[in-house]
Image 1 (cartoon, helix red, strand yellow):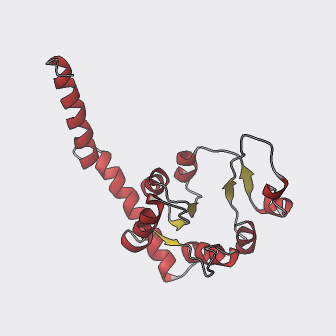
Image 2 (cartoon, rainbow, N blue to C red):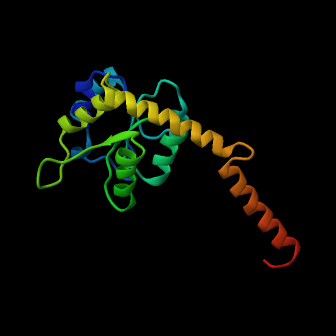
Length: 176
């Protein structure tokens, strides 16, 4: 990941969560100084706040549902880097159905994703090619769809209202 970020030459924000224990020698980045000249590395951030910022051009994500949804709702295209369970399905949706990102692939039998592949994916999403333009356009479309659904009369608004009304009705009739 580190080499891919350096090779793109693009600024970045990279969240590397620290384990609760002491940092192990093998977990340290050998090129941290280089990386910090180009981007920022932090142990935590508010993902929603970052994704909502207009300067964010791409989100490299494991494709957990919350992360995927937050990216869609913010209109940010993705590089999908799924690890297990629902992340694989979410990554497929991102690339093949919603067309709001690209999924990394492994070219070796160990399943290790090489830095060149991550760099390729970043350039597909962030670059000036037609596929990247389509992803960015689709991401903006999903952002607008999410906004519309939460407005009065939208599907999310109506569903939440129906849920609250049902709970409130049950509370007054002692059905809880």
